[in-house]
Length: 248
Image (tube, rainbow, N blue to C red; front, side, top):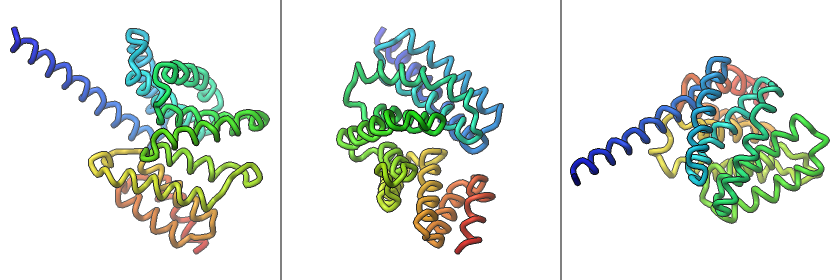
């Protein structure tokens, strides 16, 4: 009997790890390609994980995985300015994060996603900036205090500083420091780097922050680093890097 229980437990753990591995591969591919096909796959994954949350609504791990997929879809919408795609998942993400944080009010990464979602909403609806801007800023500060060693939290904080107008608290040099911290935190866990789109994203935005701060040579170094990690990172290879070289 004990042997059967052990085998069942091992099979369950294997299936969970396999499912997470496949999801990570999809998220990575969707980030690099961002095609209608990869978006369709993300939408199917969102449906699957939403059903999983319905079956186990108090499971914060399942809720966070769902939130991360929903947030990834919001980010995908930004790259093509697809407001319909954004609207399809924004409210669902906010509701899901509210439920998660009601269960666990110390979940730093959930607060970070919430802060980011409000920031993305402002991009589509600038008039909401007066309300959502301060709310987003206070939430990411809370996330930093809860977990100052989270690479994702630092990346989202950095993005906030990079894209917020200076008169409302934006600070390019602070953004650079925060992106550098995020990159170092990702790199402190080498086992997490393969096919990690968040790490690539941090490198790409660090380069853009250097450009905004009129440091193209540093941006080129970072872009080259990103391409060493992922040679098919076409956004860097075909857009960001050539632009940086043109102004150095």
